[in-house]
Length: 395
Image (cartoon, rainbow, N blue to C red):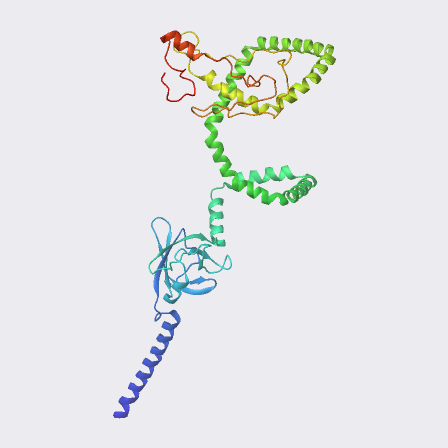
């Protein structure tokens, strides 16, 4: 009796052990005993061949798997990922997500792409990522093609194809030549494709600039319309002006042709004068700039002219022929502080060799007899004259 009980129990234990080993192997294969952290990917669609347990890869190495796929009410798909916690430190927080496959018929996988400027923060558990790109499957293409074909009426398609066949019938040589010309044209355009891509890239900025300037351009067009209307209205006056200009040109041509040599001689005679003017350009500019405050200043509050006058001692008389005009000044142009003379300052007096120096003889000019003036005013004064060197004397 003991033998009949032990043998069934041993068989049952063997079966239980086998089931436990199989369950353990299946659990290890599916990763049921592996610790994972959740991450969610929001994608426009998951794809037709995206299944749970699909791989999540980073640079080709698996860092997790797809736990489940949830369809959202707005038409998007929420792909719940089970990530290996030991790999999260290698994944930046701003990682990009692509749902791709090796072929159009193959199963999908989630590809993590590190951006050009990775975030220093690693990916966190429970973070939500955006999946911006999903590879198009051949089934999707067929589905969209079927939806398009379902909108086409067969009889109209037959008529279109018949008309196309009739149009191409007998024109094979011309059609072939067209394709050949198109190929040659594309061969010429191909080297310019980088420039074309650059033009397309900068085209939005150009269009935005034109859009910003559109009001001004429209206003310019309106003003141009008014100008053209004015020209049409004043057409007779413009004709008269042009006729008068032609007549003036004829007269001017006659005058210039007749006086060509005299005008040439005048220009040659003006060369020394213009050279001297050019040499003294700086001084002339300073002088004219110094006169500008006088010209631009406020007018006198009363009519007339304001004069500042005084008495000066007499200068030496004119002596002939010593005081004849003399042109011998040297030193070139000098501004002498002009045009900006400081407050309560005066430009220095420039002595030049023009034989007009009033102090050239060293005379003191008119001498006043102060002693005689005092006697005339106050009568005889006792003692020696006041302006003598007898210090201490009365008077």
